[in-house]
Amino acid sequence: MSLAENPEEALRKSEHRYRNLFQAMAASFWELDFFPVGDMLYRLKKSGLAGDFGAYFAEHPEFVRDMMRATRVIDVNDQTVALFGRGDKQELLSSVEPFWPESSTHVFAASVVAGVGGAPNFSTETVLRRIDGREFPALFTVCFPEDTMNKGTQLIGVIDLSDRVAAQEALARMQAEMAHAARVSLLGELAATIAHEVNQPLGAIAANAAAGQRWLARDVPDLDEVRAITGRIAEDAQRAAGIIARVRAMASGAAPEAVLVPVNEVVEDAATFLRHEIRQSGTRLKLALAPDLPTVRADRIQLQQVLVNLALNALQAMAGREAPVLTLRTSGDGDKVVLTVEDNGPGIAADHLPKLFESFFTTRANGMGLGLAIARSIIAQLDGTIAATNRTSGGARFTIVLPVHVSGTPDHTKV
Ligand code: ADP
Image (cartoon, rainbow, N blue to C red):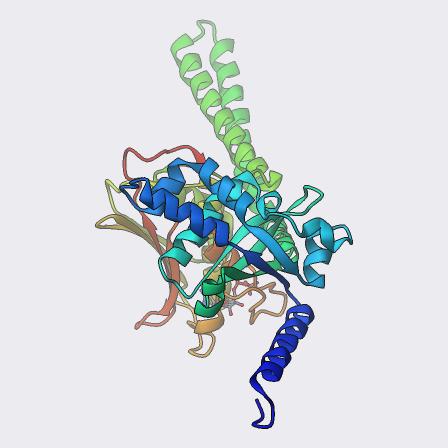
């Protein structure tokens, strides 16, 4: 304010600046008259309300809707007309009730509680409604500056979060697709293993069937032998079917499902899956599995995928080195289960360690840099952690820590 101006002129200019600002803001702004609400709250208190307002509002959502109906819209800016209206500002200058879907009633109640409690402002994400009935995610902010509060008016700001939410949804979809693509590419890498794994029981079935026929062709057929042999044939067929089922589950991109998983079995499955690679690379496999481990809640295929990824990385890191050793270890640690994958390869350069789990970080010529990023997101979904360190004796160690399933919590839910 310049000294030459009289107070009235200064007030007029200040009001003018405020109106300009109000209009020019990129967000939706509302000026509300909440005086009647103050009156409602006063009468509620007078009528002997025992508890606090918050508890009363929670029990009486109709009262909250009445407060909305009593809150009049004095003015809105152009952004508000664009976001909430159909081009006609007058249409919005009624009560705020139409703009609050039932599901957001508690948010309005919380903002009143904050204002009455003397908070300087209140801000939260919620869902609001356009005049045509369409709902959208919004950041809702309300300020309670003393001077406007005393006048009985209130300033509200609304930012449309549709784009951000849509972007987050697109990102989640992309991550799911990437995880699926990685599963499929992993399958490609493991095609030889699968063929080998299925071939083995098939070979055994063929050999046992031939042996059975020989026992039957004897002058006195040995039915006990035949019975034992057909039992083995059935077991081998089941093994082959199991391998195929696991592969199909991996390829289908089926939604992950959390069940109670015996961790040692998953480690053994992963080792079986990689038997071909392990043998071909001349690697010695060490399994150090703690007995009597408690179960964890996880998607079995996903957990196996994480271990297979880590083990494949270890095999790749040790390629061409003397006496490669891959160690898969499990242990219990209070209410946690710890899984480690260790190798005696070159280890990880210190400046790579912080970036290792980032998407697209790779040091391999034909690497995608997604294996560890996916592993981390899978483990995070299980409320676990995954970390990489270098072993003092040389080589890398990846450690996964998972919370133990506590009985009484649901054991068959979607992750
Ligand atoms: P990719 O295998 O496609 O490169 P990953 O996310 O699986 O993607 O791994 C990222 C990087 O982490 C690898 O390129 C490699 O530099 C490093 N890395 C992973 N595992 C090991 C390991 N066992 N030893 C040394 N470096 C490793």
